Image (cartoon, rainbow, N blue to C red):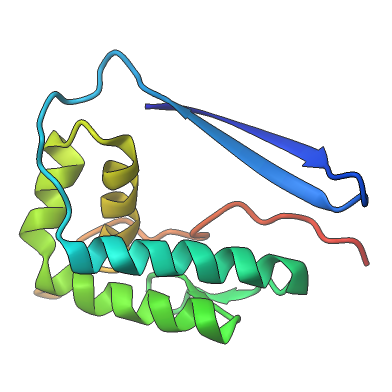
Length: 138
């Protein structure tokens, strides 16, 4: 999957971010899919995040090794990701490696970022930001 990101202005001069995803020749051919509860959480996250954009509150807490947004609706879903990542680790890894669906692979990667540390070592690299930080007018 390849992606392009563009920043545009709507007629009322608000900023809009457009992300275009295109299939890539190297996409895995598998038909592995995420379980419904993970897909639902991903959809809920997308809706909450888009709802939070006009508030321009993009601060987050990264002290636990994963992103926790300051927006309470977004943060609640990110806390669900913590539980889902541990409960469905095998499915998430399988989708990330084998699914031909780019959206599902991207969501699996996002949720895998919330796996708890195990056995005294980090199970994933520390991420500084969960998503690019838009600049808001002051």
